[in-house]
Image (cartoon, rainbow, N blue to C red; front, top):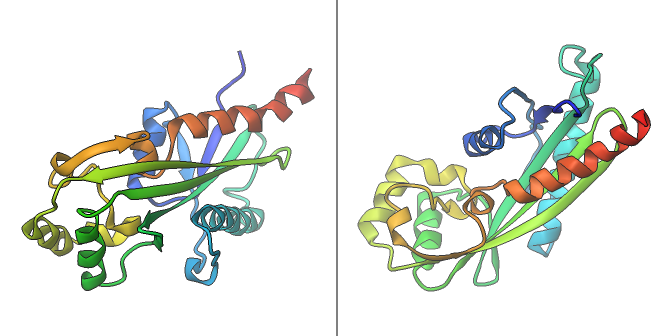
Amino acid sequence: MAAAPHIILGSQSQTRHAILREMGYTDFEVVTAGIDESAIRAPLAEDLVVKLAHAKAEAILAKLALNPSTKQRERDVPVLLITADQVVVHEGVILEKPKSAEEARRVIRGYSRSPAVTVGSILVTNLATGVRVGGVDKAEVYFNEIPDEVIEALVEEGCVFYSAGGLLVEHPLVSPLVEAMVGTLDSVMGLSKELLQSLIQQALKSNHSDME
């Protein structure tokens, strides 16, 4: 049986950390890209999240090359870099993290009218072989009426400013308001387990073929 890979996760998101641990990858490093995401644009949500995941990978690979304490080391297992990005599309508009309280109120209030569509990309890079594999996953969230007092509480708490579209389906104030979901909760939260596991297996194939 092949040994589990060592994971470098290019994200500070505690949600993504938790999802990765749920998948059994408990011993992973975190290296962030530190790029200006607002400088990378694309007209389609799918293209934007893919471009951002690749840009994050490039920035982190440059960091790893300069830092001998975190770059590819002598290991008995393959090392995989995982980068990801997510936006929310609502009524045809691409939404990223809200930049103001008023923006947060406006976009969250809008979810009472029509569904929020999450569009997330994942890119897995095998540091030993250079192989990169990626994919995009979507989900839809339908809400009942979101009361103003809930919106105000979320804005005051501040966590909405760290989530694409201010979307926090897992929040105890929000989850009871979810009417229906098309797709998986982990996808909505920014890291599809099914897609990630498939990409990891694909990225590892080159290692296995080299050993045969």
